[in-house]
Length: 556
Figure 1 (cartoon, rainbow, N blue to C red):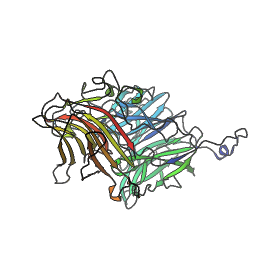
Figure 2 (figure 1 turned 180 degrees about the horizontal axis):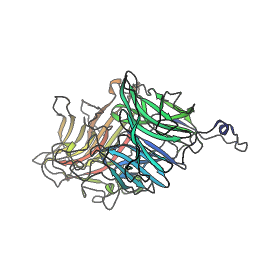
Figure 3 (figure 1 turned 90 degrees about the vertical axis):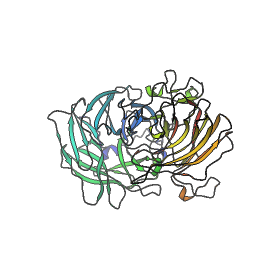
Figure 4 (figure 1 turned 180 degrees about the vertical axis):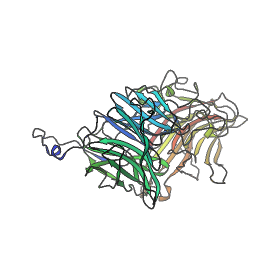
Protein backbone atom coordinates (compact mmCIF):
# COMPACT_ATOMS: atom_id res chain seq x y z
CA UNK A 1 0.00 0.00 0.00
CA UNK A 2 1.33 3.42 -0.95
CA UNK A 3 0.27 5.71 1.88
CA UNK A 4 1.76 8.94 3.17
CA UNK A 5 2.99 8.64 6.73
CA UNK A 6 2.48 11.25 9.41
CA UNK A 7 5.94 11.98 10.82
CA UNK A 8 6.53 10.48 14.24
CA UNK A 9 7.63 12.55 17.23
CA UNK A 10 10.94 10.66 17.31
CA UNK A 11 11.62 11.58 13.69
CA UNK A 12 10.93 15.22 14.39
CA UNK A 13 13.46 15.22 17.26
CA UNK A 14 16.35 13.98 15.13
CA UNK A 15 18.95 16.75 14.79
CA UNK A 16 21.52 16.79 12.00
CA UNK A 17 24.67 18.15 13.65
CA UNK A 18 26.32 18.73 10.27
CA UNK A 19 23.49 20.96 9.04
CA UNK A 20 23.97 24.53 10.20
CA UNK A 21 22.17 26.41 7.42
CA UNK A 22 19.01 28.20 8.41
CA UNK A 23 16.04 26.67 6.53
CA UNK A 24 14.74 28.87 3.73
CA UNK A 25 11.48 30.61 4.55
CA UNK A 26 9.15 33.10 2.95
CA UNK A 27 6.27 35.27 4.01
CA UNK A 28 2.99 33.97 2.64
CA UNK A 29 0.30 36.57 2.09
CA UNK A 30 -3.21 35.29 1.50
CA UNK A 31 -4.84 35.12 -0.91
CA UNK A 32 -2.12 33.67 -3.12
CA UNK A 33 -2.76 34.83 -6.69
CA UNK A 34 -5.93 36.84 -5.81
CA UNK A 35 -7.72 35.45 -8.84
CA UNK A 36 -10.37 32.87 -9.66
CA UNK A 37 -8.90 29.41 -8.95
CA UNK A 38 -11.69 27.39 -7.31
CA UNK A 39 -12.19 23.71 -6.45
CA UNK A 40 -8.48 22.98 -6.46
CA UNK A 41 -6.80 19.63 -6.05
CA UNK A 42 -3.05 19.47 -5.44
CA UNK A 43 -0.48 16.68 -5.60
CA UNK A 44 3.29 16.52 -5.17
CA UNK A 45 5.69 14.52 -7.34
CA UNK A 46 9.25 14.80 -6.03
CA UNK A 47 9.91 18.51 -5.56
CA UNK A 48 7.14 19.60 -7.92
CA UNK A 49 3.57 20.50 -7.01
CA UNK A 50 0.70 20.35 -9.47
CA UNK A 51 -2.72 21.92 -9.07
CA UNK A 52 -5.90 21.63 -11.12
CA UNK A 53 -8.90 23.94 -10.96
CA UNK A 54 -12.44 24.38 -12.27
CA UNK A 55 -12.89 26.47 -15.43
CA UNK A 56 -16.33 25.14 -16.41
CA UNK A 57 -17.32 26.28 -19.93
CA UNK A 58 -14.03 27.89 -20.98
CA UNK A 59 -11.95 26.14 -23.65
CA UNK A 60 -9.36 24.68 -23.34
CA UNK A 61 -10.38 23.52 -19.88
CA UNK A 62 -9.09 22.20 -16.54
CA UNK A 63 -5.71 23.98 -16.27
CA UNK A 64 -2.72 22.17 -14.80
CA UNK A 65 -0.63 24.60 -12.77
CA UNK A 66 2.92 23.97 -11.58
CA UNK A 67 4.81 25.26 -8.55
CA UNK A 68 7.95 24.55 -6.57
CA UNK A 69 6.80 26.26 -3.37
CA UNK A 70 2.96 26.01 -3.18
CA UNK A 71 2.83 29.82 -3.32
CA UNK A 72 3.71 30.78 -6.92
CA UNK A 73 1.82 29.03 -9.71
CA UNK A 74 2.11 28.90 -13.51
CA UNK A 75 -0.22 27.32 -16.04
CA UNK A 76 1.62 24.42 -17.71
CA UNK A 77 -1.13 22.98 -19.90
CA UNK A 78 -4.80 22.00 -20.02
CA UNK A 79 -6.39 18.59 -19.63
CA UNK A 80 -8.74 18.92 -22.59
CA UNK A 81 -9.45 21.21 -25.53
CA UNK A 82 -13.22 20.80 -25.39
CA UNK A 83 -15.68 18.25 -24.07
CA UNK A 84 -18.03 18.11 -27.05
CA UNK A 85 -18.42 19.70 -30.48
CA UNK A 86 -22.16 20.21 -30.18
CA UNK A 87 -24.78 22.95 -29.91
CA UNK A 88 -23.87 23.52 -26.26
CA UNK A 89 -20.21 24.31 -26.86
CA UNK A 90 -20.87 26.08 -30.17
CA UNK A 91 -23.49 28.39 -28.61
CA UNK A 92 -26.11 27.30 -31.11
CA UNK A 93 -29.89 27.05 -30.89
CA UNK A 94 -30.01 28.78 -27.53
CA UNK A 95 -27.69 26.22 -25.91
CA UNK A 96 -24.65 26.98 -23.75
CA UNK A 97 -22.57 25.52 -20.91
CA UNK A 98 -22.62 28.60 -18.67
CA UNK A 99 -22.32 27.56 -15.03
CA UNK A 100 -21.78 23.97 -16.11
CA UNK A 101 -19.03 22.12 -17.96
CA UNK A 102 -16.06 20.79 -15.96
CA UNK A 103 -16.39 20.86 -12.18
CA UNK A 104 -14.04 19.98 -9.33
CA UNK A 105 -11.40 17.76 -10.92
CA UNK A 106 -9.65 15.23 -8.69
CA UNK A 107 -6.00 14.71 -9.63
CA UNK A 108 -3.80 11.73 -8.72
CA UNK A 109 -0.57 10.02 -9.77
CA UNK A 110 -0.46 6.21 -9.62
CA UNK A 111 2.35 3.96 -10.84
CA UNK A 112 3.67 6.56 -13.26
CA UNK A 113 0.31 7.59 -14.75
CA UNK A 114 -1.54 10.79 -13.92
CA UNK A 115 -5.32 10.60 -13.66
CA UNK A 116 -7.84 13.45 -13.74
CA UNK A 117 -11.51 12.68 -13.01
CA UNK A 118 -14.31 15.24 -13.10
CA UNK A 119 -18.02 15.70 -13.72
CA UNK A 120 -19.29 17.58 -16.79
CA UNK A 121 -22.53 19.09 -15.54
CA UNK A 122 -23.85 19.96 -18.98
CA UNK A 123 -23.69 16.27 -19.96
CA UNK A 124 -24.36 14.70 -16.56
CA UNK A 125 -21.41 12.37 -17.03
CA UNK A 126 -18.02 11.78 -15.43
CA UNK A 127 -14.84 12.01 -17.51
CA UNK A 128 -11.44 10.44 -16.86
CA UNK A 129 -8.28 11.70 -18.58
CA UNK A 130 -4.74 10.29 -18.32
CA UNK A 131 -1.19 11.27 -19.23
CA UNK A 132 2.34 10.06 -18.61
CA UNK A 133 3.72 13.62 -18.55
CA UNK A 134 1.71 16.04 -16.44
CA UNK A 135 3.74 19.11 -17.47
CA UNK A 136 3.67 18.55 -21.21
CA UNK A 137 0.87 16.07 -21.85
CA UNK A 138 -0.88 15.19 -24.01
CA UNK A 139 -3.88 14.16 -21.95
CA UNK A 140 -6.08 11.44 -23.42
CA UNK A 141 -9.73 10.77 -22.71
CA UNK A 142 -9.55 7.47 -20.88
CA UNK A 143 -13.14 6.76 -19.90
CA UNK A 144 -16.60 8.29 -19.63
CA UNK A 145 -19.02 7.13 -16.95
CA UNK A 146 -22.75 7.61 -17.34
CA UNK A 147 -22.99 8.57 -13.66
CA UNK A 148 -22.21 12.13 -12.54
CA UNK A 149 -19.81 11.84 -9.58
CA UNK A 150 -20.39 15.28 -8.05
CA UNK A 151 -17.20 16.81 -6.53
CA UNK A 152 -15.45 13.45 -6.43
CA UNK A 153 -12.29 12.63 -4.47
CA UNK A 154 -10.17 9.84 -5.97
CA UNK A 155 -8.10 7.35 -3.97
CA UNK A 156 -5.81 4.57 -5.12
CA UNK A 157 -5.51 2.12 -2.23
CA UNK A 158 -3.30 -0.96 -2.77
CA UNK A 159 -4.55 -2.39 -6.07
CA UNK A 160 -8.00 -0.81 -5.87
CA UNK A 161 -9.48 2.58 -6.75
CA UNK A 162 -12.39 4.46 -5.19
CA UNK A 163 -14.18 7.78 -5.42
CA UNK A 164 -16.04 9.49 -2.62
CA UNK A 165 -18.61 11.87 -4.05
CA UNK A 166 -21.95 13.58 -3.52
CA UNK A 167 -23.72 16.64 -2.23
CA UNK A 168 -25.30 16.21 1.20
CA UNK A 169 -24.66 12.59 2.06
CA UNK A 170 -21.43 11.22 0.57
CA UNK A 171 -21.14 7.91 -1.27
CA UNK A 172 -18.21 5.65 -2.11
CA UNK A 173 -17.96 3.89 -5.47
CA UNK A 174 -15.29 1.41 -6.54
CA UNK A 175 -13.70 1.78 -9.96
CA UNK A 176 -11.63 -0.59 -12.04
CA UNK A 177 -7.98 -0.31 -10.89
CA UNK A 178 -7.07 1.57 -14.10
CA UNK A 179 -10.24 3.73 -13.91
CA UNK A 180 -11.47 2.33 -17.24
CA UNK A 181 -14.97 1.78 -15.83
CA UNK A 182 -17.09 1.60 -12.70
CA UNK A 183 -16.29 -1.81 -11.22
CA UNK A 184 -19.15 -4.22 -11.78
CA UNK A 185 -20.21 -5.67 -8.43
CA UNK A 186 -17.77 -3.41 -6.58
CA UNK A 187 -18.41 -1.21 -3.56
CA UNK A 188 -21.14 1.34 -4.25
CA UNK A 189 -22.87 2.56 -1.12
CA UNK A 190 -23.42 5.47 1.27
CA UNK A 191 -20.30 6.33 3.27
CA UNK A 192 -20.98 9.46 5.33
CA UNK A 193 -24.31 10.85 6.50
CA UNK A 194 -23.59 14.51 7.09
CA UNK A 195 -25.66 16.50 9.61
CA UNK A 196 -28.92 18.03 8.41
CA UNK A 197 -29.95 20.20 11.30
CA UNK A 198 -28.49 23.68 11.39
CA UNK A 199 -26.81 23.35 8.00
CA UNK A 200 -27.22 25.76 5.11
CA UNK A 201 -24.91 23.66 2.92
CA UNK A 202 -24.24 20.02 3.65
CA UNK A 203 -21.11 18.07 2.73
CA UNK A 204 -19.60 18.43 -0.75
CA UNK A 205 -16.19 19.03 -2.34
CA UNK A 206 -14.80 15.70 -1.11
CA UNK A 207 -11.06 14.93 -1.04
CA UNK A 208 -10.13 11.35 -0.12
CA UNK A 209 -6.83 10.22 1.44
CA UNK A 210 -5.28 7.20 3.18
CA UNK A 211 -2.64 8.63 5.51
CA UNK A 212 -1.03 6.47 8.18
CA UNK A 213 -3.67 4.41 9.96
CA UNK A 214 -6.65 6.45 8.84
CA UNK A 215 -8.82 7.07 5.83
CA UNK A 216 -9.66 10.78 5.65
CA UNK A 217 -12.44 12.58 3.81
CA UNK A 218 -12.18 16.36 3.70
CA UNK A 219 -15.33 18.27 2.73
CA UNK A 220 -16.90 21.72 2.84
CA UNK A 221 -20.13 22.54 4.63
CA UNK A 222 -21.89 25.66 5.81
CA UNK A 223 -23.50 25.88 9.24
CA UNK A 224 -26.35 28.36 9.38
CA UNK A 225 -25.19 31.57 11.02
CA UNK A 226 -21.51 30.81 10.43
CA UNK A 227 -18.97 30.86 7.62
CA UNK A 228 -18.21 28.04 5.23
CA UNK A 229 -16.29 25.37 7.09
CA UNK A 230 -13.80 22.62 6.30
CA UNK A 231 -14.76 19.37 8.04
CA UNK A 232 -12.65 16.23 8.23
CA UNK A 233 -14.03 12.70 8.60
CA UNK A 234 -11.78 9.78 9.52
CA UNK A 235 -11.92 6.04 10.05
CA UNK A 236 -9.43 3.20 10.35
CA UNK A 237 -11.69 1.15 8.10
CA UNK A 238 -12.46 2.06 4.49
CA UNK A 239 -16.22 1.75 4.97
CA UNK A 240 -16.31 3.32 8.40
CA UNK A 241 -17.79 4.22 10.72
CA UNK A 242 -16.38 7.75 10.30
CA UNK A 243 -16.02 10.39 13.01
CA UNK A 244 -15.81 14.10 12.18
CA UNK A 245 -14.03 17.23 13.33
CA UNK A 246 -13.99 20.85 12.15
CA UNK A 247 -10.42 21.52 10.96
CA UNK A 248 -10.81 25.06 9.54
CA UNK A 249 -13.41 27.72 10.21
CA UNK A 250 -13.04 31.45 9.85
CA UNK A 251 -12.57 34.38 7.48
CA UNK A 252 -9.74 36.52 6.14
CA UNK A 253 -9.39 39.95 4.57
CA UNK A 254 -12.13 41.54 6.61
CA UNK A 255 -14.81 39.58 4.78
CA UNK A 256 -17.57 37.33 6.07
CA UNK A 257 -16.81 34.56 3.57
CA UNK A 258 -15.32 31.40 5.02
CA UNK A 259 -12.14 29.69 3.81
CA UNK A 260 -12.76 26.06 2.87
CA UNK A 261 -12.72 23.36 0.16
CA UNK A 262 -9.45 22.16 -1.23
CA UNK A 263 -6.57 19.74 -0.84
CA UNK A 264 -3.80 18.87 1.61
CA UNK A 265 -0.29 17.97 0.51
CA UNK A 266 3.06 17.22 2.15
CA UNK A 267 6.46 18.70 1.32
CA UNK A 268 9.62 16.67 0.74
CA UNK A 269 10.63 17.58 4.31
CA UNK A 270 7.40 16.21 5.75
CA UNK A 271 5.57 19.47 6.46
CA UNK A 272 1.91 19.68 5.48
CA UNK A 273 -0.14 22.44 3.89
CA UNK A 274 -3.67 22.97 2.68
CA UNK A 275 -4.84 25.09 -0.24
CA UNK A 276 -8.37 26.25 0.52
CA UNK A 277 -10.37 28.85 -1.40
CA UNK A 278 -12.47 31.77 -0.23
CA UNK A 279 -15.53 33.14 -2.01
CA UNK A 280 -14.43 36.70 -2.66
CA UNK A 281 -17.19 38.46 -4.52
CA UNK A 282 -16.76 39.51 -8.14
CA UNK A 283 -13.12 38.43 -8.54
CA UNK A 284 -14.21 34.84 -7.91
CA UNK A 285 -13.09 32.09 -5.58
CA UNK A 286 -9.50 32.75 -4.60
CA UNK A 287 -6.91 30.32 -3.17
CA UNK A 288 -5.24 30.58 0.23
CA UNK A 289 -2.40 28.55 1.71
CA UNK A 290 -2.76 27.27 5.25
CA UNK A 291 -0.21 25.29 7.29
CA UNK A 292 -1.44 21.95 8.62
CA UNK A 293 -0.53 20.54 12.03
CA UNK A 294 -1.40 16.97 12.91
CA UNK A 295 -3.01 16.93 16.36
CA UNK A 296 -4.16 13.56 17.68
CA UNK A 297 -4.29 12.33 14.10
CA UNK A 298 -6.40 15.28 12.82
CA UNK A 299 -5.14 17.70 10.12
CA UNK A 300 -5.79 21.03 11.87
CA UNK A 301 -5.36 23.91 9.43
CA UNK A 302 -4.27 27.50 9.89
CA UNK A 303 -3.81 28.86 13.39
CA UNK A 304 -5.47 26.14 15.44
CA UNK A 305 -8.33 25.90 12.95
CA UNK A 306 -8.59 29.60 12.05
CA UNK A 307 -7.26 30.71 8.63
CA UNK A 308 -4.16 32.89 8.42
CA UNK A 309 -4.10 36.15 6.52
CA UNK A 310 -0.31 35.78 6.46
CA UNK A 311 2.36 33.59 8.02
CA UNK A 312 5.99 32.53 7.66
CA UNK A 313 6.36 29.23 5.80
CA UNK A 314 9.37 26.92 5.66
CA UNK A 315 9.21 26.97 1.87
CA UNK A 316 12.09 28.12 -0.35
CA UNK A 317 10.72 30.67 -2.81
CA UNK A 318 10.00 29.60 -6.37
CA UNK A 319 11.77 32.35 -8.29
CA UNK A 320 9.90 31.56 -11.53
CA UNK A 321 6.91 33.42 -10.05
CA UNK A 322 3.25 33.39 -11.09
CA UNK A 323 1.60 33.12 -14.47
CA UNK A 324 -2.12 32.52 -14.27
CA UNK A 325 -2.86 35.94 -15.80
CA UNK A 326 -0.52 38.08 -17.86
CA UNK A 327 -0.05 40.89 -20.35
CA UNK A 328 0.44 39.93 -23.98
CA UNK A 329 2.10 41.82 -26.84
CA UNK A 330 0.89 39.32 -29.47
CA UNK A 331 4.36 39.62 -31.01
CA UNK A 332 5.38 35.97 -31.52
CA UNK A 333 8.33 36.30 -29.15
CA UNK A 334 9.06 34.24 -26.02
CA UNK A 335 7.25 36.99 -24.11
CA UNK A 336 4.08 35.07 -24.91
CA UNK A 337 5.48 32.49 -22.48
CA UNK A 338 3.37 29.61 -23.66
CA UNK A 339 4.18 26.34 -21.94
CA UNK A 340 2.89 23.27 -23.76
CA UNK A 341 1.19 24.48 -26.97
CA UNK A 342 -2.55 23.77 -26.82
CA UNK A 343 -4.44 23.04 -30.06
CA UNK A 344 -7.11 25.65 -29.34
CA UNK A 345 -4.43 28.27 -28.69
CA UNK A 346 -2.59 27.89 -32.00
CA UNK A 347 -3.56 29.34 -35.36
CA UNK A 348 -1.37 26.76 -37.08
CA UNK A 349 1.66 29.03 -37.14
CA UNK A 350 1.85 30.71 -33.73
CA UNK A 351 0.59 30.20 -30.19
CA UNK A 352 -1.30 32.26 -27.68
CA UNK A 353 -0.15 32.27 -24.07
CA UNK A 354 -1.85 29.61 -21.89
CA UNK A 355 -3.36 32.35 -19.71
CA UNK A 356 -6.02 32.74 -22.44
CA UNK A 357 -9.19 30.68 -22.74
CA UNK A 358 -12.05 30.98 -25.21
CA UNK A 359 -15.61 31.44 -24.06
CA UNK A 360 -16.89 28.06 -25.28
CA UNK A 361 -15.49 26.40 -28.43
CA UNK A 362 -13.84 28.67 -31.02
CA UNK A 363 -14.26 28.25 -34.79
CA UNK A 364 -11.21 27.19 -36.76
CA UNK A 365 -9.65 30.10 -38.66
CA UNK A 366 -11.40 32.74 -36.59
CA UNK A 367 -8.19 34.29 -35.27
CA UNK A 368 -4.57 34.83 -36.24
CA UNK A 369 -1.30 36.13 -34.84
CA UNK A 370 0.42 36.14 -38.24
CA UNK A 371 -1.97 37.81 -40.70
CA UNK A 372 -0.80 41.10 -39.22
CA UNK A 373 2.41 40.43 -37.36
CA UNK A 374 2.46 41.83 -33.85
CA UNK A 375 -1.34 41.98 -33.66
CA UNK A 376 -4.09 39.56 -32.67
CA UNK A 377 -6.78 39.45 -35.36
CA UNK A 378 -10.26 38.32 -34.28
CA UNK A 379 -12.83 37.67 -37.01
CA UNK A 380 -16.57 38.05 -36.62
CA UNK A 381 -17.64 34.41 -36.74
CA UNK A 382 -21.10 34.77 -35.21
CA UNK A 383 -24.14 36.80 -36.29
CA UNK A 384 -26.01 37.74 -33.12
CA UNK A 385 -27.15 40.77 -31.18
CA UNK A 386 -26.06 39.15 -27.89
CA UNK A 387 -22.42 39.03 -26.78
CA UNK A 388 -23.21 36.00 -24.59
CA UNK A 389 -23.98 34.04 -27.76
CA UNK A 390 -20.90 35.16 -29.71
CA UNK A 391 -18.20 32.62 -30.45
CA UNK A 392 -14.64 33.82 -30.56
CA UNK A 393 -14.56 35.74 -27.29
CA UNK A 394 -11.07 35.43 -25.78
CA UNK A 395 -10.76 35.70 -22.00
CA UNK A 396 -8.36 35.65 -19.11
CA UNK A 397 -8.61 36.16 -15.36
CA UNK A 398 -8.64 39.51 -13.64
CA UNK A 399 -6.70 40.01 -10.40
CA UNK A 400 -7.35 41.68 -7.09
CA UNK A 401 -7.32 43.67 -5.06
CA UNK A 402 -7.32 46.16 -7.98
CA UNK A 403 -6.17 45.90 -11.57
CA UNK A 404 -6.44 47.57 -14.97
CA UNK A 405 -6.88 45.89 -18.36
CA UNK A 406 -6.00 47.86 -21.50
CA UNK A 407 -6.01 47.18 -25.24
CA UNK A 408 -5.08 49.13 -28.36
CA UNK A 409 -7.63 48.37 -31.08
CA UNK A 410 -7.57 48.98 -34.84
CA UNK A 411 -11.07 48.71 -36.35
CA UNK A 412 -10.17 49.24 -40.01
CA UNK A 413 -11.47 45.75 -40.82
CA UNK A 414 -14.88 46.12 -39.17
CA UNK A 415 -17.96 46.12 -41.41
CA UNK A 416 -21.49 47.50 -40.89
CA UNK A 417 -23.15 45.72 -37.98
CA UNK A 418 -19.85 44.64 -36.36
CA UNK A 419 -19.01 44.96 -32.67
CA UNK A 420 -15.50 44.68 -31.15
CA UNK A 421 -13.77 45.69 -27.96
CA UNK A 422 -13.02 44.89 -24.34
CA UNK A 423 -15.46 43.41 -21.83
CA UNK A 424 -15.64 42.92 -18.06
CA UNK A 425 -17.10 39.49 -18.60
CA UNK A 426 -19.70 37.88 -16.40
CA UNK A 427 -23.48 37.68 -16.61
CA UNK A 428 -23.70 41.30 -15.42
CA UNK A 429 -21.13 42.67 -17.87
CA UNK A 430 -19.72 45.97 -19.12
CA UNK A 431 -18.25 46.58 -22.57
CA UNK A 432 -16.12 49.40 -23.92
CA UNK A 433 -15.73 49.03 -27.66
CA UNK A 434 -16.66 50.02 -31.17
CA UNK A 435 -19.94 49.60 -33.05
CA UNK A 436 -20.39 50.13 -36.79
CA UNK A 437 -23.82 51.29 -37.95
CA UNK A 438 -25.50 50.40 -41.25
CA UNK A 439 -23.89 53.35 -43.03
CA UNK A 440 -20.39 52.35 -41.95
CA UNK A 441 -20.03 55.07 -39.29
CA UNK A 442 -17.97 53.92 -36.30
CA UNK A 443 -18.90 54.78 -32.71
CA UNK A 444 -17.15 54.16 -29.41
CA UNK A 445 -19.74 52.74 -27.01
CA UNK A 446 -19.81 51.89 -23.33
CA UNK A 447 -22.61 49.48 -22.44
CA UNK A 448 -23.72 47.81 -19.22
CA UNK A 449 -25.77 44.61 -19.30
CA UNK A 450 -28.22 43.84 -16.53
CA UNK A 451 -29.24 40.20 -17.10
CA UNK A 452 -32.43 40.46 -15.12
CA UNK A 453 -33.68 38.15 -12.41
CA UNK A 454 -37.00 36.78 -11.26
CA UNK A 455 -39.54 38.62 -13.44
CA UNK A 456 -37.18 41.43 -14.50
CA UNK A 457 -36.16 41.43 -18.19
CA UNK A 458 -32.61 41.80 -19.46
CA UNK A 459 -31.57 45.42 -19.99
CA UNK A 460 -28.69 47.06 -21.89
CA UNK A 461 -27.75 50.59 -20.81
CA UNK A 462 -25.67 52.63 -23.25
CA UNK A 463 -23.49 55.03 -21.24
CA UNK A 464 -21.46 56.42 -24.15
CA UNK A 465 -21.86 56.57 -27.93
CA UNK A 466 -19.45 58.95 -29.63
CA UNK A 467 -18.21 59.00 -33.26
CA UNK A 468 -14.66 57.82 -33.88
CA UNK A 469 -12.29 60.32 -35.53
CA UNK A 470 -10.11 57.58 -37.02
CA UNK A 471 -9.54 53.82 -37.06
CA UNK A 472 -7.71 53.34 -33.76
CA UNK A 473 -8.81 53.54 -30.14
CA UNK A 474 -7.39 52.63 -26.75
CA UNK A 475 -9.75 50.91 -24.28
CA UNK A 476 -9.48 50.34 -20.53
CA UNK A 477 -11.34 48.70 -17.69
CA UNK A 478 -10.32 49.51 -14.13
CA UNK A 479 -11.40 46.88 -11.61
CA UNK A 480 -11.72 47.42 -7.87
CA UNK A 481 -12.49 44.24 -5.98
CA UNK A 482 -11.14 45.31 -2.59
CA UNK A 483 -10.83 49.10 -2.23
CA UNK A 484 -7.67 50.80 -1.04
CA UNK A 485 -9.22 53.29 1.34
CA UNK A 486 -6.66 55.99 2.17
CA UNK A 487 -5.73 59.57 1.31
CA UNK A 488 -3.47 58.74 -1.64
CA UNK A 489 -4.34 60.06 -5.14
CA UNK A 490 -5.31 56.54 -6.19
CA UNK A 491 -7.35 55.86 -3.06
CA UNK A 492 -10.87 54.43 -3.26
CA UNK A 493 -14.12 54.84 -1.39
CA UNK A 494 -15.40 51.87 0.62
CA UNK A 495 -18.41 51.64 -1.70
CA UNK A 496 -16.07 51.08 -4.69
CA UNK A 497 -15.79 47.38 -3.80
CA UNK A 498 -16.70 45.13 -6.76
CA UNK A 499 -17.04 48.01 -9.23
CA UNK A 500 -15.41 48.56 -12.61
CA UNK A 501 -14.90 51.73 -14.64
CA UNK A 502 -14.81 51.80 -18.46
CA UNK A 503 -12.66 54.28 -20.37
CA UNK A 504 -11.47 55.11 -23.89
CA UNK A 505 -8.81 57.27 -25.53
CA UNK A 506 -8.08 58.36 -29.10
CA UNK A 507 -4.37 58.95 -28.45
CA UNK A 508 -3.46 56.48 -25.68
CA UNK A 509 -2.83 59.32 -23.22
CA UNK A 510 -6.02 61.31 -22.59
CA UNK A 511 -8.81 59.13 -21.21
CA UNK A 512 -12.56 59.66 -21.09
CA UNK A 513 -14.63 57.72 -18.59
CA UNK A 514 -18.43 57.53 -18.27
CA UNK A 515 -19.77 58.70 -14.93
CA UNK A 516 -21.56 55.42 -14.24
CA UNK A 517 -19.54 52.37 -13.18
CA UNK A 518 -20.33 48.69 -13.52
CA UNK A 519 -21.58 47.12 -10.28
CA UNK A 520 -19.99 43.68 -10.63
CA UNK A 521 -21.88 40.71 -9.27
CA UNK A 522 -20.70 37.12 -8.98
CA UNK A 523 -23.71 35.24 -10.34
CA UNK A 524 -24.30 31.51 -10.33
CA UNK A 525 -25.61 31.37 -13.89
CA UNK A 526 -21.97 31.72 -14.99
CA UNK A 527 -20.34 30.63 -11.68
CA UNK A 528 -16.97 32.21 -12.55
CA UNK A 529 -15.17 35.35 -11.47
CA UNK A 530 -14.94 38.39 -13.71
CA UNK A 531 -12.60 38.09 -16.69
CA UNK A 532 -11.33 40.57 -19.22
CA UNK A 533 -12.55 39.50 -22.65
CA UNK A 534 -11.66 40.51 -26.20
CA UNK A 535 -14.61 40.17 -28.56
CA UNK A 536 -15.56 40.59 -32.21
CA UNK A 537 -18.96 39.60 -33.62
CA UNK A 538 -21.55 40.93 -36.04
CA UNK A 539 -25.23 41.77 -35.86
CA UNK A 540 -25.51 41.72 -39.67
CA UNK A 541 -23.09 39.57 -41.69
CA UNK A 542 -19.76 37.77 -41.36
CA UNK A 543 -16.50 38.96 -42.89
CA UNK A 544 -15.27 41.75 -40.64
CA UNK A 545 -12.33 41.62 -38.26
CA UNK A 546 -10.68 43.56 -35.43
CA UNK A 547 -6.95 43.88 -34.74
CA UNK A 548 -5.64 44.07 -31.16
CA UNK A 549 -2.11 45.45 -30.83
CA UNK A 550 -1.64 44.31 -27.24
CA UNK A 551 -3.39 43.35 -24.03
CA UNK A 552 -1.88 44.87 -20.90
CA UNK A 553 -3.02 44.01 -17.39
CA UNK A 554 -1.45 45.21 -14.18
CA UNK A 555 -2.21 45.67 -10.52
CA UNK A 556 -2.08 49.20 -9.19
